[in-house]
Image 1 (cartoon, rainbow, N blue to C red):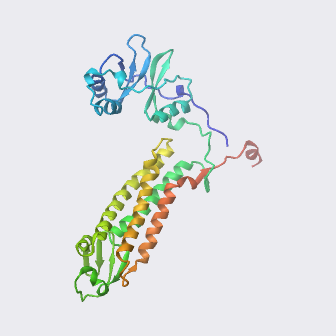
Image 2 (tube, rainbow, N blue to C red):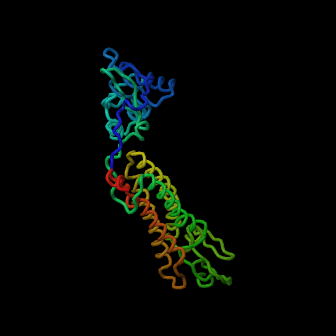
Image 3 (cartoon, rainbow, N blue to C red):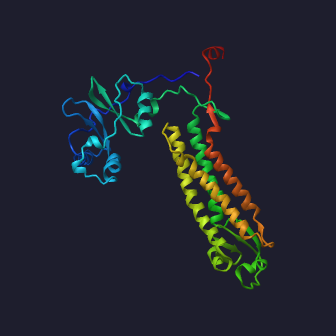
Length: 332
């Protein structure tokens, strides 16, 4: 596979009107200028030599000054800025991108003869990074593996959320089920009604039954409280998983670094909570022979967890399609 052309920073649009600030001013003055120019950061320039010293951004002010309870009026911008080695027009885009990615910052100054020329942003670099390291791990060959993984991961995560979290929450299926008359011991009352009732994430449902699970806690112990709490955590982490997989897969597509807590830990916690939900229900019904597992619920729950595992490990789905060599193109 032939690599893309290697672009230099000079091929990008360099913002030569980017805001600057002298190194001798206070953080307060920097914050005022950031607000005035409506930009997220400023390039810090040495007052005498006019050399680039670093970049101060609104995040740095919050983290290094406000959060540390320092006085912004008596703190220089040099105490809050981040230091990143400037690049030149001849610097490869991939090198500039790597600098920003490693420091998790948005811009890098561009200099010429030690004077500020402008800045380039990490967003400007996205489409100019050569694909010198093709993705050769995957089952299906495609031209753009990361884009394909983003599309598939988003769809299967949404399906997993619907099948494994929304359906039991809305009572489409339950975890356990049984005849109403056989389960009256749970309610500590005699009920002459007949029919199947199912125990879902938050309620007990039947043809003419609708009882919140929390009502069983007072009569049957803390296990039912734990079930309800676990159900809420499954719902909350399910929503977080939707966003984490969507965000991490689009970040992979754009070559952004994503912390493991977003990329894998949150989805794995969701899977663990779904398993815990079944375990708690099994404990609650362990001594009740008249109750049985809802087969439909078990099937969709397992399917949902498998889909989430596939979304987490989406790298195994696609690999870079090999382009034919010049000899093969001529032969064809």
